[in-house]
Each structure stands twice: as C-alpha cells, then as structure tokens.
Length: 331
Image (tube, rainbow, N blue to C red; front, side, top):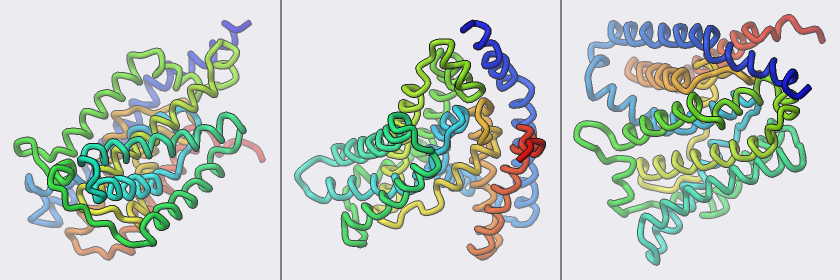
C-alpha cells in the first residue's frame, strides 16, 4: 500500500523535472533576453561590463535568499520573514565586530548562526506545533524586525573593519566576491536538488505530502531542515549586505523577501509545491535585478519601480495558479 501511495508523488516528481520546468525556463529566459535588449536600446550606458558586474553584486543578496527559498516553495511551504532575518543578522554581526573583543570572522560566523537560529524558530513552530507557515513567518517577520531595532535603539551601527568589508566589496580578479559566492551556492543547491535523495525528497513532499509520509519519508523533519537552511542562507545574505553597506542597519532589506519570492515564482517554483528548479530561480533573480537596474538607469522613480515589481509578482502568481489548475478549483 505504501508503494502504491508513493506512485503519485514519484509521478509528480518526474513531471516537475521535465516538461513543466522546461517551459518555465524557456519563459523566464526569454523575459531576460527581452529586458536586456530593451534596456540596451533605451540607454547607451547599459550594455557595459561594469553594469553587469553591478547587477551581479545586487543579485547576491536577493539571489542568496531566493536559492534556499526555492526549496521551501518546492516543498509546498513559504517563508516571508527573510528580510527581517537579514536585518537581525547584520545587527548581530555589527555588534560583535564593533565590540573589539573578537576578530571580524567571529562576527561573521555569529551573524550566520543567528540566521540559522531564526530558521530553527520558524521550523519549530511550523513542524512541532503544526502552525500555518504563512502566519508563522508573518509573526516572525514582525518580531525579528522589532528585535533589529531594539539591538541599537534604531541606530545604524557602522562597521569599519576592512577584512569584513571585503566580503561585500572585494573582487576576485574582475569578478565581485559576492557574485562568486552566489554562483557557488547555486551550484551546490543544483547538485542537491538533482542528484541527492534529499533533493528528490523535497519534490516528493511538495507533490504529495500524504503519499510521502506513507512511503516512510519524515516529512516534518525535512520541513524543519529546510527552514534551518533558509535561515542560514538569510544569515549569509545578511553578512554580505552588512559588508556592502559597511554597517548594521535595522531597516535593512525591507523588500528582499518579496523580491526573492518573486524571483522564485518567476523561475517556476510556484506556491503549490512540487515544481521548480534552482536554475530557473537563478534566471528569475537576474530578471528582477536587470529590471531594477535598468529602471534606475532610465531614472524611473523608485515608487514606480515598486509598482512594476509588484505587478511582476502578481503576474507570476497568476501564471502559477493557471499552471497548477488553481483557477479551476471550486470554492
């Protein structure tokens, strides 16, 4: 019986890794080419190596968070507290480094571990108390943002350590260090998603959690691990942002989570679970970062940029609903 129950999940997994994701990759890749072409024609300064390197540096923060968020979405869950986690991580790293009692790398590790603990907090309430993931991460988003302000009474904590600043501002040859780190993350997550039992388990849980449970998969434990991974990646993103800005900012990354979620959905990892690829998310990140950079170069107001990015998210969610058959469901 367990073997029969597992069949739909395996079937969903095969579909997720073939036609559906191929279609999403083609769509989002086409969107990226269209954007690059449009902005290159609209601005004579756009199609230059420095611009693309800046896009890469900008993509590092959103892309790092989106990387692990892909696994969250594929498993049929959601986490919208990433931006607040990034803010708390930056503040903790700043406090440790500014204390003068520990080397800069301890502050970095302390920040990353703070992100991991934030993920553990989300995972604990979602898997142990079986709370709704959306409501839980809204609550933690609000709570963590408040903690970020409480740490310094709302003040910016400037970081002067040059070794720490290299993380966000340094280069390896002509390539920004953060872009190199981002690419390494995506290679690792791609390998995990395609060639490991854990990666296949994530797709099976998202495709059919009940069948996955009956087949012997520890669904709740896997979900908990995914939230810890997501928190850890928010930790890396928070360290990179604090390094780029040279400070711990309690108001940091207010839109990072929505941008990351938009990139994940654009890349094909919808809210219904069981679908999506790491490669699709990477291209989705590039689409959003190219869009933001291009609009800035064309002197489009930041208010209009928010409107346009919001429309992109709305369109992406609508497309996901159509693909998953959500529009056909009866109330």
